[in-house]
Length: 199
Image (cartoon, rainbow, N blue to C red; front, top):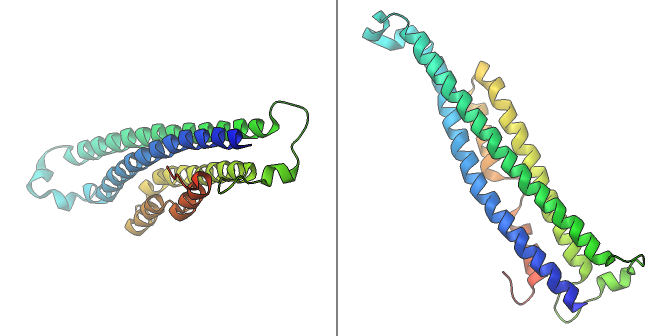
């Protein structure tokens, strides 16, 4: 049983790598979102010819600047979608680790372990049930957060048509907060799995 727990701890080390990757992607997505927000907030100003002063005598300047800004926004939105694909890849990897974890409990045999065996502890080490439940929780948190991020990013083109600074700020706050990944719960899972040697 102790050897099985060690195998699970190795899986959690792999999960930690994916979570570190997630944090990098989070920083990237926030940067991309701020860039997109800045452009969206500028679009109304660009369409107001009174804001051009002496430049309004230059033929087609408003349209040229607007087109340039829209092209930049389109490129940022494409980059954000690529970043979302990378988030999705992390979720898929976590899902695979959960499947492998379930397979580890089954041991590849036809005999299913009893509930008592899954909940058995050796000293302060976690039970197999703790390990599997921890993997499932981490996957569920990140999958839910990925779905939220996808919906936030997909809302941006709609806001572009009718910009609202408060809407943009609310969406950005959702991305900053990562409401589906409570850091204290993630740490609690790691504390249980690693007992005396938290990674």
